[in-house]
Length: 199
Image 1 (tube, rainbow, N blue to C red):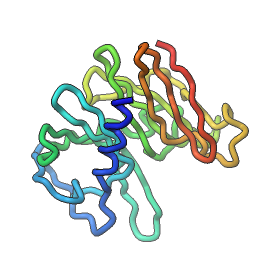
Image 2 (cartoon, helix red, strand yellow; image 1 turned 135 degrees about the vertical axis):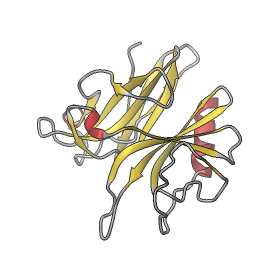
Image 3 (cartoon, rainbow, N blue to C red; image 1 turned 120 degrees about the horizontal axis):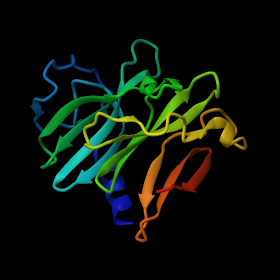
Image 4 (cartoon, rainbow, N blue to C red; image 1 turned 180 degrees about the horizontal axis):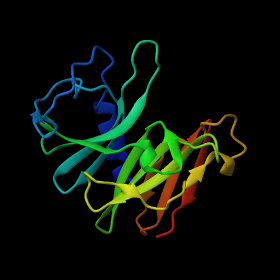
């Protein structure tokens, strides 16, 4: 429960920019000073925190929407801080098509550590073989990636949840590791779903 409370508090504190976006810095590794919103050189969406030791990592979607586009989230980025004031950008960690079965949309994602490895659960649009939103899982030995597809197929796809009212039921994954070590994937839109994960 403690990790869920921490995640909720961090997400509330980390609002995304809704105003004009400054040009992207060419130096991704340069620390950024404290601002509100946190990042002003990129439009970010769906922040998800992960604490490792004394470092907070923040995973976000990079929204490239222009003009009348509602959103166009093309990749996931990660930032880190040890003081909640100075942030370091680590650059893109993954794009949707790094899942070979996915076609687009770097929607909400979350990373979690287990046994020294980092698992990145992400919402994408599945290719035409299984239309609709899907959840993939990628893995890395570092919280800053690179992340690679852990399965070679979607963990959850729209055809697995046919009771949903639309094709984007399977979004916004989060993982909770209980005191007994069991891990649970939770996700949904309109309907709430959960499933126990295999080790």
